[in-house]
Image 1 (cartoon, one colour):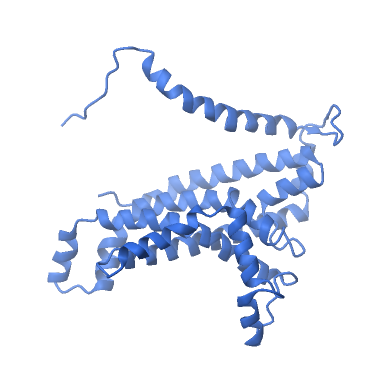
Image 2 (cartoon, one colour):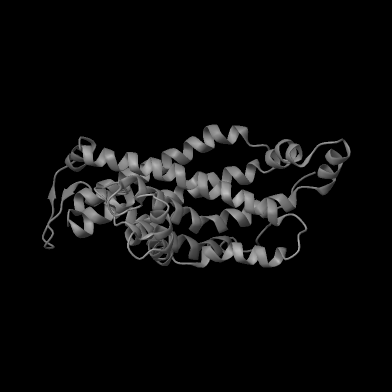
Length: 295
């Protein structure tokens, strides 16, 4: 059966409908990206004077810097842990919400709320909970004999920012996983139950494979989120510390550019970060999508 195709009588109407979106992309993506690429080849004057063209020197200094490679390692660990924690928790919540339980509507509404919280506010909430002096949860941990102090311990700081960033993204994953579960034909689940398959078998053999398109989509979205959209949380919770333990690439771009006034190096870092995210996304589409099962 041939798919229906929309035909516009006016040849310019499709371009007119796409124009607002293209204008937004040009102003808020292509133009800033072009400016970053341009500035990455210059040694910028922090006082606003003309920059000095240095070619690839900014990139060379970055790629030979131990501090920069340390930030790359921190970012990869942070992105992996945040993506895994946010997706796994969102999936578990979606599985429970998909059941016909009493009060499920209240449960769904409560699970979506964190996504409406601004990143800085979310970071501040977790700081108040886990601050070693005034934090309620930190006080409990210290009382139990756990020397919790994210201000001095890099591992504790990484745990705190991962928890805060994952908590912020759980709602997004929950909504998509729940929609994917509800789209699975109930007849498949019922037929498996009649054949004697238990809840765990039905989930692993039927529900999870049919959720693979949703899972693949969320892997891409959560990876981009961990690399780019967690700046506010890092800034509010740890400020990149202690001793660079949570100094992710996106925070380092801000810190070097706006605090250190090294705009050339900051622009070069943003270009490398953009290439890294594009490369990871292409890798996911090239290799991870092979395991996706489309119904």
